[in-house]
Structure formats: structure tokens, C-alpha cells
Length: 364
Image (cartoon, rainbow, N blue to C red; front, side, top):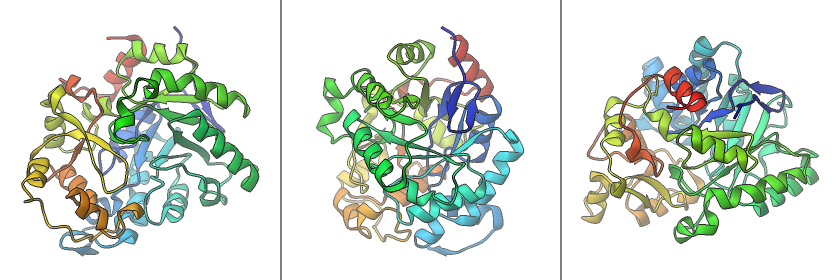
């Protein structure tokens, strides 16, 4: 099967492979820049850019060593610096930014990403009904929402058409095998009717009702045969996150990569999250501490996501997601939260992005 270029808005992706946005600090300048350089679409995560800023500029706008409040956790200067460094790698090739809908200051972060040079904005973690408003001053920036059902796409298209006379430039449909936050409730993630192979064709059909925007399949995709299966079901592109963790250029710490590589299938679980959606990762010492009620005290320094309600939901689930993801980025094995897709246990080596792209396009 020939893999054709993927057109998203005014931008053409040479190889129809999108690297999933992974925060905190798993997909920043090195990974996203290299993926775009190699012909895919690199995606910079906007989450936790204050941590990058502190390291880039030796600046401390911090509370107890952590970015203080959303304005610093989602740092304008940090995101700008990440894009500058990614551009040094990929030049003028298309580059995307993932901005979660559930975050505080969503509109501001979208504008920051557009100003920093994002060609495409990708948004999940909630149905982004107001996404066009956030990007209204940047008509050339393509908008790509993430959905889990055809109904969600229909609702979103109706709203966008009514409020801004605009439709998505592409849509990502994500099944419940992905890493990080899911689009289904806990029990729904295991239902056969919610698996990617089942939800993809209805979304493809719904997209045709709105001008046949390209549909991108995500969640549990691993190799060329998986990509070919998705294309046979009507997808025009695929998004992968977990496999890119196992690359030399991935911005994650060596300790983070080691946790994923050493994980076992039975240790990759769905966890409750302060964001309000179940999230998938490796069960590590953090979860043991939560069970023993010995997890780090929740102080809500960064005020990162609206559904958490200034740490109230974090107290319910037993951990602060901003602090725990930041600790994972720093390679702190005792308190880090290590997100991965359901296939994370299949990672067994660290290769270059170039080598991985070759495997995905040409097979193992």
C-alpha cells in the first residue's frame, strides 16, 4: 500500500504520520523538530513549558521549584523558545502544537502557539467547541480537534459552522488504547464497540457529511500493518505517541524511557486523573504511595487544569498531575507519573526518529 501525503488545511505532510503530543516535556523541540524534518508532523506539547523556560533562561518564577500559577506553567516565553529550537531542526516544514482543552488559559495558550509559529493546532481532553474563537486571529493555522465518536464530530461541526462559519481542517479519532487521557469513561474504555476499529468508520462517514476532511486514526497504532488497517478503514493519516518515546531524540529523560522499556503488559493501567478522564500509564511507586496514603502533599502550585478545581480533584485521586508529570520528566522514579499507551510494553530499544519513520513506512 502506498502512503500518500496528508493535506491539513494549507499544509502538506509528506508522510501521513503524526507524532502525538506528549507533556510534560516528552515531545518538545528535539522530538517534534526531528519528526517534521523526517517528513512526518512533529507535535510540540504546550503543557509545562514553564519548566523549559526555567532551564532555558535560568529563571525562577516558581513556587517550591515549580512554575507558579497557569501563567507560568503554560509559559509564553518557554513555548516560544521550544518552537525556535524546533525550527532550527525542521526549517519551514509543518509543525504542530497540542493544546489541551481542559487547561486553564486555553485561549491564551492557543494564541501563544500561533504566535510562536505553529502551523497546526491539535486539541483534545474535552470537546473543543470554542477552538475557532481561540484561533480567530490566525486564519492560516489549521485546526484539528480530537474526538472519540461520530456524534462528537457532528456536534462540533454544527457549532463551528454556526459560530464561526468554519470546519475542522482534519479530525483525529482516538481509541481507548492511547497513552494519557482518554475520551471515554473508565468502563467504556474496555467496551468492544468503543475500540478504534469500530469508532473509526462512523467518523470517516460523518466527516464526508462536512466536506470529507481527512480523518486521522490514533490510539494503539504500532507498526506498518496497523497503519494499513487504519487506511483500509478510511483514515488518511495516523497518530502515534508511545513509539516515539523509544527514540534518541525524544525529549524525555533516560529514566523515563527506561521505565517504559522495562514495563510489562500487566503493569500498564488506566488510572483516575484530576482532569476528569481516565489516563493510561505505567503503575509505579507513585501509585503505591497513593494506595498507602503517603503520596506527596497536594498544594496546587501550578493551577494547571480547570476540572481539577484548584487541587480539589487532585485530593480525591491522590496526586497532583502537574507535579507528577514534571517529576517523570525529571526522571524521579519515586514520585513520577509515566504515561504510555497500552502497547508501551512492546518498546524494547531506543532508535532514531529516522529509523522509526522508516520502519513505519516500509515495515520492520
